[in-house]
Image (cartoon, rainbow, N blue to C red; front, side, top):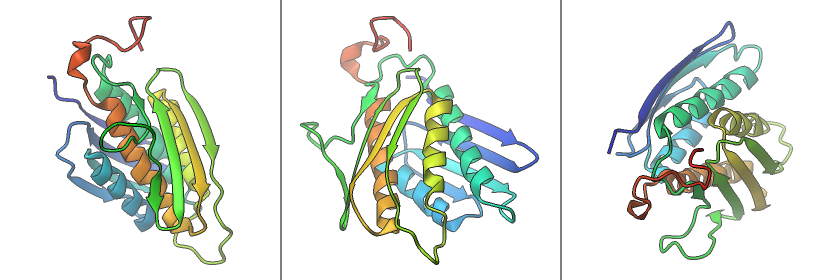
Length: 206
């Protein structure tokens, strides 16, 4: 099977992002975004999805973190779309299923439960039902995670639904989301030998 790897670079007057994504492991990662909390979340994604990921990014964080977080999401989505190619043989859908592939499994993190479902349909759609607690002091603006995942969904042209079932600790909520996204995406991009390298759509393309 052709190696499913992509390297993308995005440079603007606000940010510079270099990103490399491998869909078939071995799950090694090096993430340096100048935002330590986002580094940690992307590392969790790579580890739990068994993706290879390298990110080197910087931006005008002296103004706000928004530009950098969103542009990393856009670059990630572009890399994912390129690595997938014509999507022949993939499962297409991902729901963070349990290890036996039976039913639906939520992603727990202590008191937190989240659910993520996605479809690599080629038709971008994003639904976000997550609420973070207001904090006086935090290492990261958690509301920016909505912008990150929306950027991923739009640039990768995926249908992405993210829902928080319960949770009160913002760190736990974020961790649950990134672990769940890694697991769901790993299921969606996995190649199913029963499909015999066909595109998983009656239209013949995605």
